[in-house]
Image (cartoon, rainbow, N blue to C red; front, side):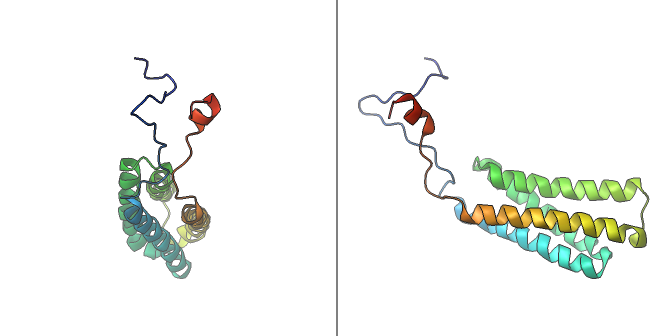
Length: 149
């Protein structure tokens, strides 16, 4: 049996399309994604007043990012997985820049605010895309192209 062969519908069996978002985990994924959006937006707004708030917003972003990446990966959903990994990468990047340049709060204020605003814009776009994407099962494009379904 060739695992790479085009699925063939036989009598008594049906090839079911792969769902875009698994229905059992949608509330958890949606909740984590919105939580990360709130943390990113809240962290950005807090950093506009004082850059030292990064000590509180970074651990909250790390927590939601790890949870989102883990649950998204378990559900085979790339959008939340990528969003979660990007939060971890953003924290690592900002930390690396601050340490490499030996910045204190006064010298890190402008660059950290700029990076945070850019990431917040990205986060808002991803959250909106996740919210309005089609939650119905995806059509099996491969079967339609091959004429098998």
